[in-house]
Image (cartoon, rainbow, N blue to C red; front, side, top):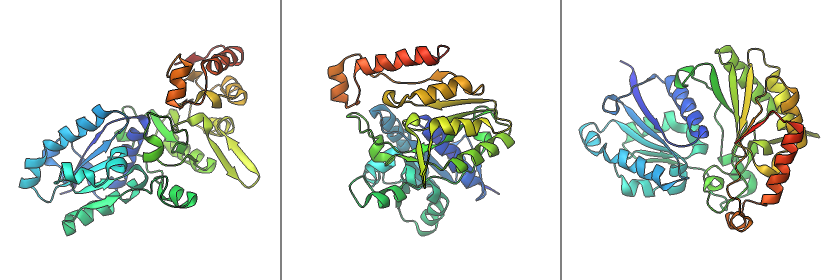
Length: 314
């Protein structure tokens, strides 16, 4: 009989994509999904730390598993994602029946960590280096990305999929934990992204949403060549089978003219731009450390109106 996996996801599109890849990886190790935690051999929570409510929801769900763990000690319970990276071993203090804690940069280790936790009956922790614990290269390397294992059954519709082009963030807004939980900003190689788009197209996907914490700051430098988001859109648009391309979320100061022109000129690109303003007060924006003013946001909106008048801005 195959092993059963229950997974619950809280948070952003990145978490949804991470969960899809975790499931794809575990399927390769003999797991099948179940919607009933009580039937699962492994129970995973992919978590978010942007809001306190999201963390409270996870701890509440963990609390319901205390009795289950007593009755079925071989059932492995894991906390994944940003909350795992932020709180690390503190999670064991609040929920001592949790078996593994895995940050978003270490999700590729989950299959072996589950088996080790079950075999050795020991707690497993796999997290990335924090932003001050090592050289810049070591910190970047500790935030690894998944190989592009994709699982259409995990998507709300097989015709739409998320495609990660970037991990991490270097903006350090006052209110946001993401730069510390997902690490430094790093763009994936364009060739990897296009290859994954082809895999998605072969699986029947027709619409891809390119994901990044500040997606329009995407850069990939190889030798003397720098690939920007505008260049990447051209490459992804050439993938047969992909008919529609979106990208989220954008940062106002990185909304460049070449990007707007690419969206206008590429028929496959949706003219939808998600560009958070956050506040209409310069004083509040300064306290938030957003790095721009209301006037700069207005200037961006004016350029969007001139170069991409059909745009929908949210």
